Length: 69
Image 1 (cartoon, rainbow, N blue to C red):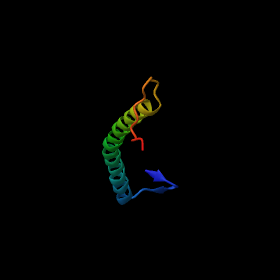
Image 2 (cartoon, rainbow, N blue to C red):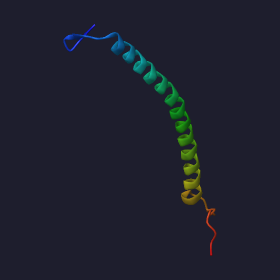
Image 3 (cartoon, one colour):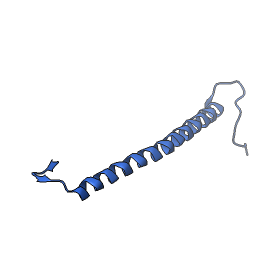
Image 4 (cartoon, helix red, strand yellow):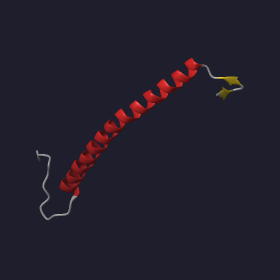
């Protein structure tokens, strides 16, 4: 293999394979984390929507989530 006009050594080739494998593993590990965070975000958005509806929703008798002093 030629890179920048010179041959790539066996060590460089092995190192490239190691790094490629490490990157693939990191992507796989982070994919699960990303999916978990997306699910968490979806749940938070649902909670936010519910709270907005409670505070700003249309009804003749609005329910307050804050006590009146």
